[in-house]
Length: 384
Image (cartoon, rainbow, N blue to C red; front, top):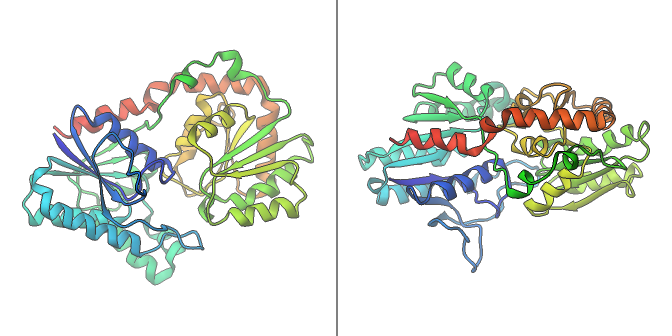
């Protein structure tokens, strides 16, 4: 079958959980099927460096403004590029697999397929479903009303939808999604290095204790809450160290807080590093700290617990990653204020070998359902 994968980012040129999902999906389905990846241009003269055909339908450029929110013009240009590509080639595809966000490309794909009377099925991934309350908090009363109206319109377009959390699935059903919905439970790729680690390696508690943070530094990730949380935790654990991996609009503010709180010798901020480095840092950490208020899935949490490293997350009405935590078994979920985060960090560190063994056991019991292979079986079956 000929399948178009539609997403405006390409891993590793852009880093994130959805980026990795679509890269892994394209790599694994290209062969049994013919995959064309439709995205923005995010590479130079060296090309996209993919094993599958990759087409840039719009120019690249910064996705985020200085505030950390997405710019409006890149998704509009991407939507226009998707429209023209599918207007010309839509009848040549058997299926179009699109991310729901940014919505302009989903709207464009649906219109183009109908105008060309293409028989391609429109299949949509919903990593997140915001709903009216979050739209209002994000764009204000007027902009939020428009944003939710567009999101709700998009819910009426798919021939089939996939979600990655119970949160997204319940919201789709509540807001009138009409097509079949199936929840996928796995996005994790277990590489040979992770699979080859012994239980002794995975359960050994680091000394001195280290907290690792990994992700884009944007307001929704709450990275500016991390330095105060580390400072508070160090009153109980003076030897505690922290490594904050990743970059973004909030990176400078986070570094400034590190220095203001006198943590320069305790907190390392190397910025963006490659994925292998992230994995190795997590493997040697006492716990992962991930205080994000908004997560569609939380693959970094799965990566952490697969290494035997428990995770500390924060409550949030938009945070589906908390579905991956069994309290006290593979980590903790707490409030987002520094005192609460610090208390949870202390519990994770003091859990030591016993908590790491419990975390590793939790992963072993959920290994199959968390694997990307399980999800790909369901996605591939949907093309039939």
